[in-house]
Each structure stands twice: as structure tokens, then as C-alpha cells.
Amino acid sequence: MMLAELVSTADRVGATSSRLAKIDALADLLSRADPAEIPAVMGLLLAAPRQGRLGVGWRGISALDIAHADSPTLTVGEVDQALDALATASGTGSAAARSGILGDLASRATAAEWDFLVRAMLGELRTGALSGVLLDAIARAADRPAAVVRRAAMLSGDLGETARIALTGDEGDLEAVGLQVGRPVLPMLAATAATPSAALEVTGRASVEYKLDGARIQVHRHGDEVGVYTRSLADITHRVPEIVEIVRALPAHDVILDGETLSLDEDGGPRPFQETMSRFGAEVSRELVLRPWFFDVLHVDGRDLIDEPLSVRLAELERVVGDWRIPGIVTDDADAAEQLSRDALAAGHEGVVVKAVDAPYAAGRRGKSWVKVKPVLTFDLVVLGAEWGSGRRRGWLSNLHLGARDPSGEFADADGYVMVGKTFKGLTDELLRWQTAEFPEHESHRTASTVFLRPELVVEIAVDGVQRSPRYPGGVALRFARVKGYRQDKSPAEADTIQTLRSLLRG
Image 1 (cartoon, rainbow, N blue to C red):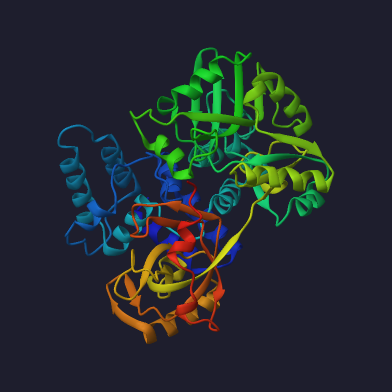
Image 2: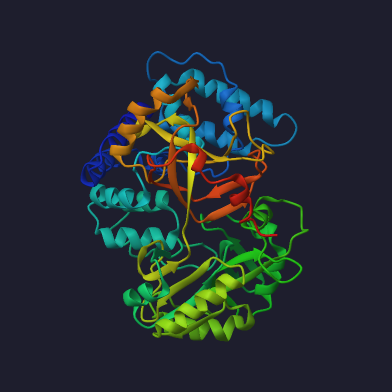
């Protein structure tokens, strides 16, 4: 398959808001792909190449000064081979080798193809081709039941392999994909509610559990062999030896556990999220010890439990993990759920998750059986700039640069504001059109990718919290920021301060 076909399809998918139109375009593409190319096609569409980490970043890519091809000649297979070479480059001279591979790839790609590849390699391809849409496209292209395709993807944890099986295998091959110890599955996800009481109205009798400000882990054990995986199914076993030893000591030969981990401070309280995540990225450092909390079990000693109700799974979880189980209660009492939420927040955690006790484990799905509840904070911040969008947002000013006021002058630039993060979340088409028309009226200067503004517009931003960040002068960054709306009734002098944001940092 020519790369140009993939790029053209991605452009069509990104240009429409119709889910059915996206599915039709992707199904047509997949039906024309060579069987050997299907995993690579899926990886590029998801901006998650099948090779995993490629060892390249924006700095190395932006340093290239290469003339692109005038006409398309690259195939998906050739791109996949180049990504293989990037992923396997290591040791002395690897930086130069990667630069050479990228340069060759850039020179053989047209400008449009290179733009697509850069965004795919950096995980910034926003076409609306999310996993749910792609699963429906696989089912359409293969003429297989959507439920069977979805379950195979959940239990294999690999959309590319699921697509290959669906499109090239026999009728029973998809049904044969099952839970397997040592092969991570997509994690079950949670919806949201404003309060524990509201969550209970959705779930009925439920297990109300602490929601930690940590990192999701899935742990597989077969005898003495233990594997630890992240939310995205990356293998981090070698980075978390303390978790491996804990799981080896549990009273089971084969087990699959779902849970969360974080590092604790000297008083037993949770350390900031980024300190936990630093351990996930560290190959050698063991200064911070990670403590696991398990909240579900999918398999124990030959018995699959994902189709069992949570009440059955919790009984097995208690038997297997004991004190390593996450704090929680089973209740249908709203007052009890509210109290547990207050206890979780007082202990420094994010809130609670409310889980219906009669629900099975829906791997990879975000339904109403699990509902997370955590406080949402809002701040009035100043827009310092906006980046031009891509995909469906091409031609619109999209990703906002957000600044807090600094009356002390300790962190701010000459205008008195300090950047604290970026977001494109929550922007409707109406807001995108308004921004694109309005922002040039406030422009101070621009680059090819960004329009910088005078600090004159105030926007209300919802966040899940803040975290320490060496990236920004104020030492703090927003977590999961999204736009609630512009505050034309407020002046920049009324924006929240960097000191207010910094006061939210633990310790």
C-alpha cells in the first residue's frame, strides 16, 4: 500500500465529524491493505507505531533541513522498515544513525506525507481515528460481528494483530482469542460523576474505593515469572523490582491483577504524581520505592474471572492480595460513600471510584459500571498564544498557551504573566472559529506554528490539579486542563496568580 493512500484517508477522517463517515473511510483503507502491512497501518493511524518507542523527539525532527519529494513513492512497508531501524538503533553513534534514517525518510516523503509521519511518530496525530472507531472499521472491513472484534482486541491488547486476524483469519480465529497470562489486556475504564451519591445512583450497590494519584499497573504472574505493564501495555517489569517481589510472594501460581502504584513520602502519604512517573521512565534509579494497591483480579490459577461479577472477583482478590488491596467499602449508602471520599481526599488521594458489584470486567471499555469521582478545580487564566491546529482543526487556532498572573514578579516575564500549560481540550467548533477570528486582534508576534498574544483575554480552565514542572518558569504545570469558556467579564488583572497554583503543590 502506498503511504499516500494512508495519508489521504487520514485527511478525510480528520475532516469529518461523522462517525459513520470515518468508519467507512477506514474500512475501505483496511480492506485494501496487504496482510503484512495491517499492523503498521493501524499503528500509524493511532499515532502509536507498532515498534513502540522510536528514540526520536521533536528536537531531532525539527533540526532536519531536507527537501521533500515532489511526488509520492513511499510504501507503508518501507516506512515500517525505517521505523524498525529507528527503534533498534542503540549504542555509540545511535543518534547519528537515527538522524540519517530520519533524513532519508524525509527526503523520500512528500511534504504532506512527512507532516503525517512526524505527527504519527510523536503521538500528535488527531484525526478522530480513535480505537473505538477503528474497531468498528475492522468489523466492517472484515464483515465480522463488532462485539467479537472488540472482545478480541481487549483480550489481546493489540489492535493491529486483531485487525490482521479479522481480515485474514478464519471465522473462528477471532473467537479463539482469549485471556492469556503474560499477555496484557486493555484496562477497564471509568466514567465520571460529580459526587459519590450521584455515582451510586448509576451503579447501585457498589465497591467504593480510593482513587489514587498514581500510575495504573497490570501485573501477570506465572510461577516465578512476573510481568508488570502500564495503562498503555508497555512492559516496565525491569523498572519495578519491588512490585515483582511482592507479587512473587502472593499465594497463587498464575494470576492477573489490576491496580495502581505510587511512591510514598516519609509519613506514608502519596508523593506527587510526576515522582511516581519518574520511576516508570528510570532504567537504573531506585531511590523512590513504589507501593502497589490492587483493586481487581482477572485470572487466578486456571480460572478466568473477567466475566464474573465484581463481587466474586473481590472475594478472590481479598484472598490473594490481602493487605495489598486498595482501601474501600461495599455499600449502597450514599452517606457512607461520601465519608469514604472525604477520607480519601484527607489522605492526599484524588477521590474515589464507585464500581457496580454485579458488573463483569469490561476490558478496554468506558461504561457506567465504574464511575470515578474527584474534585474539579477551575482557574481564570490569560491566553498567551495559540498554535495552528492539524487534521480536522487545520486552519484554526487551537492549542492554547495559558498563563497565570504573577504580582510578585518572581517568575513572570516583562508582561507580568507566567506560562503554566497548554490545552486544546474543550474547544468547540464555535470557539475555534471565534479564536481564529479574534486572536489576530491581540497578536504580538507569530512563528510558523504559533500566534503569540498580548495578555488581554481571560479563559476559565478546569483542571484535575497541578504538578511540579521544570519546564515552566513558575515550576508548576496544569494537569488535564480543559476549556470551560471565555470570561469576557473579567480583565487580565483579575486572573488567578501563580502563587495560588503553587499553593496546591504537595509539600
